[in-house]
Image (cartoon, rainbow, N blue to C red; front, side, top):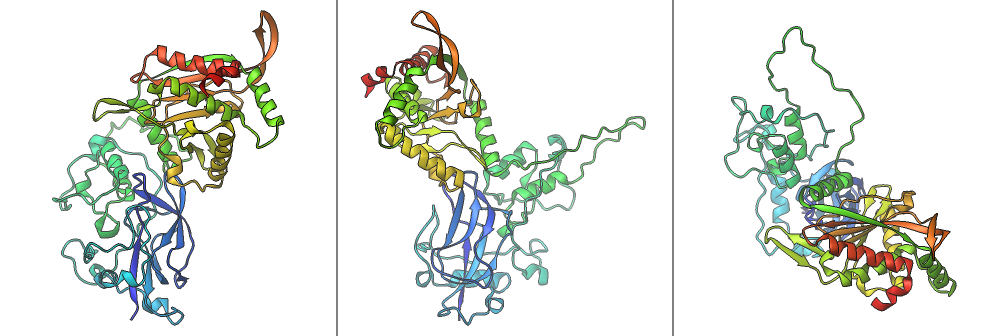
Length: 472
């Protein structure tokens, strides 16, 4: 007899709690090999192909494309142990409804079919004893009948956000007859908890539509759409209707960016200073380096090398603030983030150990990560762990900006466009290649003197690249 294995959405790392199904790579009835990718999902950080650790025939898929699932929710079920799987009818091999399906998956022997490979926190390691999965009856606790024995449905698609009623109205006591959780609330996503907290929704009064009664974002948003009894308005008053417009869900990459930038503004007392610099000599040095042969050196790579030299002089700017311990943590390595615009939005890939690289190596790494970013192939590890960010917004044709620090870093250097401008050079007015440099820093880690010293060193290296030789 074939055994049906249930494969759940694994932990994709970096604290991610949910992912959106972008594209299914297999269909029900397909034969899959061990570690074959079965679905492409998009997290708040990257798009990832998820491999299945079991080999066999796909008997069920959970969730349509566009559905957002929490970590731990079922993805597919696979019938294993049927030889070459050619004689298996997926309709008859599907897991039995309700408890039977969960029992079959729990009783299967993963050692015979699982890969043993893991993503983060997931794999076919069964050192812990299997437990039977409890299925919440459709009729509520204690329910019976066909509805109570039906298998848990796939997580529903997340509806478009709706206007939230006043928190005071939503936080009112649940209606009579509404069951209230008395034990731990079945919700694992901190984003769902935050949504409920911000809108005054009592999670204990909700029944989750996810596996085993898990409360999803859709459940909270459904509670927000429920009508709330409001005092009757005077007969002469006319309720104002808000203007209708296009609604764009704040989720995925855009939602992650919004949360990170908002947190930066909330937690970091930032300040910005800026200076104009004559980049004529820097551009001449770059042209000479590229004319000498070998791989081309980018302007961004030269600026990155200048930044790492400046951070060696001012290490307090390569740091982070540990609020729990009330300490400033100076970091030993420079992991340099740089802003890259893609079709998915703005991402910040990270060059690891940038302080150990020369301009040629930095150019190659920038090019590699930019290509991966535009193709949507960056791994979550490529987008995290930065200690300092270099933001070249000059590519958008602007001169200056006051960038928001990439939390939890302590500083960011912004570079505007390099354009011909009138400039006093050697006592005479001349047309020179001028760039504006802006530096935003966390005022908790240093004072203005340190920030000014950093920015002045960067400007001096731009104007006179020979100054950088003293730091090489």
